[in-house]
Length: 77
Image 1 (cartoon, rainbow, N blue to C red):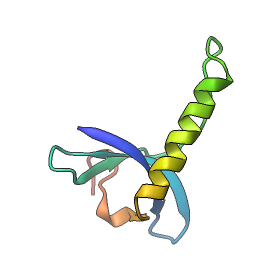
Image 2 (image 1 turned 90 degrees about the vertical axis):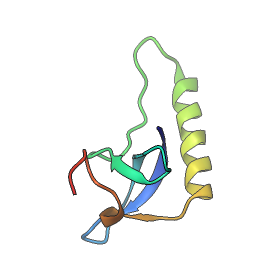
Image 3 (image 1 turned 30 degrees about the horizontal axis):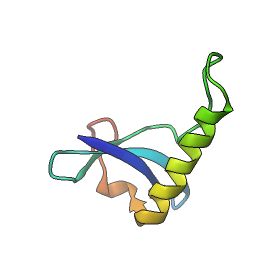
């Protein structure tokens, strides 16, 4: 299984950045219910946030917008 950041178009039309998870065949099977937040633990430094932001930018540049109906949230349709 794998995951990446994707821009998701929700049923009401708004867009948000989510972590999307894929099955062994590469099909989306779930996503975070709450859009992505970029924070670090008190023991981490700003580099952790910068690394996550870079990954998010790379992912959204490589993959098209995903419609919410194409993914099941938390294993639910």
